Amino acid sequence: MKSCIKLRITAFVLLLLFSVHSTLSITDVRAEKTGDFDLNLRYQVRYSSELDVYRTLTRAEKWQGSQTAVIVCDMWDAHHCLNAVRRATEMGPRMNEFLKVARNRGVLIIHAPSSCTKPYENHPARMRAKNAPRANNVPADIGQWCKWIPTEDQKRYPIDQSDGGEDDDLEEHKKWAEELKAKGRNPRAPWQKQMAVLEIDNADAISDNGVEIWNLMESKGIKNVILLGVHTNMCVLGRPFGLRQMAKNGKNVVLVRDLTDTMYNPKRAPFVSHFSGTDLIVEHIERYVCPTVTSDQLLGDEEFRFSKDTRPHIVCIIAEQEYQTKTTLNKFARQHLQKDYRLSFVYENPKDRDDVPGLEVLADADLVIVSVRRRALPTKQLEHVRKYVETGKPIIGIRTASHAFSLRKAEPKAGQAVWPEFDQQVWGGNYHNHHGNKKVAKVWTEKSQLEHPILAGIGAKSWNSGGSLYMTVPLAKGTTTLISGSVEGVEGQEPVAWTHQHIGKGRAFYTSLGHVKDFENPDFQQLFRNAIDWAISK
Image 1 (spheres, one colour):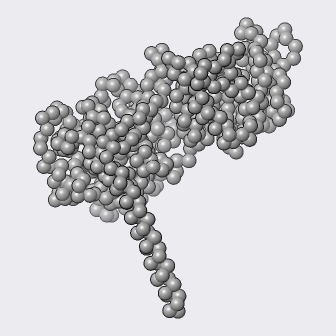
Image 2: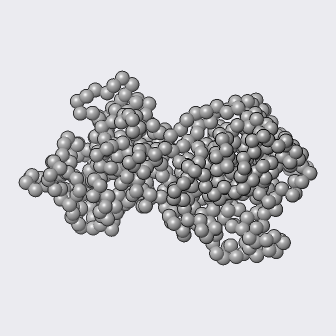
């Protein structure tokens, strides 16, 4: 019995020592990382005045810790939405680690639990904010909520939050309200202080007052502001210390996009998942308000993701001018995919057709859709595509993807690379021309493949395609043709849609359909959605 007790005590002591040692080691490493730190700021710019689509770009910046503040927005100890509480509770520990590292870098941490500063009335952090000298440049409306800034004028808000954004199960919500009431809290406004998991250091500041926070930042020489907390579409954007006020009044402000959450109900427009709703708000911010960053840029690991956010990540690479897929594919993805998938779009540089920045996002992709025509990419950019294929993950191509990275007879310029075998190695194809734009292409589903999941909901059917019929015969061994086509006056037929196992051993689907009129066809829409679900289901 005694030996058993000794063994348990020894095990406990060893575990305790390991925990302490691990904590000290982490603290020691972080304590060394003071001063400047590097950030990769993500933002979006409109492709052109003619196209209402946006390119996602990044830029590297070095920020000095002593000139930077982190504002923690409304991370309350309770909320009227139970799911919001669950998400904040899950995110809290990660956020606290972020604050620790930022603090060790010399960053000023400002805790801003709106309407909940009274419990901290005598805390040194609260006194620091209250006693900050009045700045000479206090903006006229810095103490007010900010609903819009000029860069957002006439822009449609991406989600409907008119119902308050609660996404609770109704029965759970009712029980949660009763529980809050039993605790003596107002079920509609139950917050009393900041959540306990977020440590408040004596060197921090506490305030929910826009004027106080502005005075404090000016007295400390703060030029850079990092916002995190909840909720992105409401408080994080609109509070007196929120993104809009900081951007409008000249601070270098960023949102930590993986340490935030929205108030959005998927039963409201645009009827996407809760997490896709957050993505849409982040897009809005990156286009019209300020750039965003991720927590791993300070913590040095991987960005945070909610456990219930299990959406596969689809990346659309669009670099062609002939078939308007910047518009058609984007619209299709928004309408048919955003509910179930996480979306990213990569476009070519409008000033340089052979430059497609942003392909590093493929490292996080679960499926890639290619709509590219005859591009010789910088070697490093094309390497991202090669590496993705090598992972064995699925890939889908439409129309000109059969000659995505091949030139006709020209040689690539210095520093550029092509992949002429891409068609054969990835799609199992053999594109060598087309039958001409004036010849109507009639296409039909192969009767022998009607049970294939990609043809589900289509059945035995034929229709006229919007574009010319590609010459693709013969295909590689192992391909399965699902749709074929022909043109009047030409003997024989051509494969139009098929599956293949690409050189990385993953699933591939290709179709030479993809004309503007094809995207208007419900059968093509069904085919394309089925192919995406099939490709990613393995």
